[in-house]
Picture 1: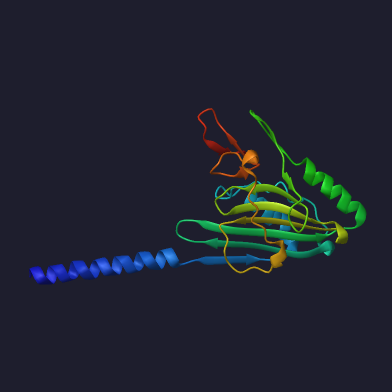
Picture 2: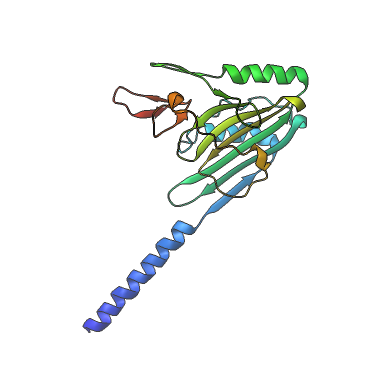
Length: 202
């Protein structure tokens, strides 16, 4: 009887471990590329409490005829959700100039001061970085001035397939003197409270 009981316990443990492995490895991949719903998806991400950004670097208004690439990707897993949201727009000269000025002026005001995108001129394209936080989360804008093209990218824990041109994928680490702290890197949307805890600005 004791042997049978032990066998039942062992089999039960094996089945429980197998179930946990299955749940952990199970992923639901959501892929959306219908540009007509761009604003709906943008707002959805801005109000998702698992997202480490407010995506203010992305434009609120777009002309879908000028869009050359767009994808909203989300992977749901047991512990963490992964996101990638990108937009590629080819503007006319006037629109490009206006949009570049908007990007430069995006900011968040906190008790400790004001935070702007960090300008980087060391990459293949001039870049404005709003997130490089050391937790595989990046948000930035690439400026292709020669073609009046702007590439907007948000990526959080996303390591899966996507259609974005590989030359637009950047994992830039901001210099130490511009980081929020040594571990966290930089996130324009976060501030630190009186106890030194990071908070996402809503």
